[in-house]
Image (cartoon, rainbow, N blue to C red; front, side, top):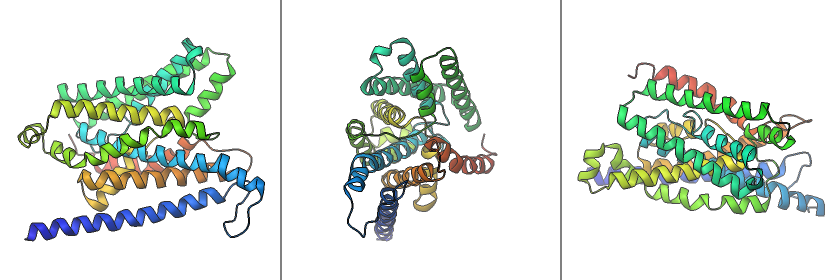
Length: 331
């Protein structure tokens, strides 16, 4: 009886917070559509220019921000389960950097394939390779939190060096434009690009549905197998799903760091560590964070637009430092 009441309380608490965050997302989304060089008031009749501005520019950009934010937050939460480390995150561990490296190599070596679909496939392949490497190393060598973070940081530095060398030896203007884009940004997102990001949504939904299975995996491989979980099959499915999400996010938004780190951690502080609750709420909060960051990126300066990745990093880096200090005793 007590356990049943506790579960009912936890479920109602989760629904309450989910509704609160959905309301916040709706408010932030409305602000995103209104603000900019031309203010669009929802309380007056819109001119043809304002309608065109909202429909062709701001609405696709808003949806892209929501999808990318949800994608990064959920992939970060799943990586933390896969690696058994609450400090795991695609950007911090070099997975996003791996996706960007393969994209740059595609443009540098096979420019004829440098299409939106080509970039997406290249980013997914890069994210898949780096995720497989990290999971394999963490599993076989049983790395501590500190060592795993060092491996991730080293991978990030290596990918950054490769990208820098590629740009340094290129005179192609598109390469320089891509370098700016890899700092993170969704400017110029069209409905065509948005349609390509929609395939990320089913993956996010599938991972959220698998939250209860992830809870079993967190108990350890032995306990998970005793509860009927095919651990090996599940692990490969999760690796592929995370790679698709990270690759898709990088292909359309560049390297946007720290979303996958701070969002699941903040939700964990509010709702606990149960992934069946954590992942859906993380998807909503990730969307809120990236939409809010994009508002800052678009409106902070009058003369130019800030890279979205710079804004999310400015928000996430202090929180990450605090988390490192808090976990300094981990071995």
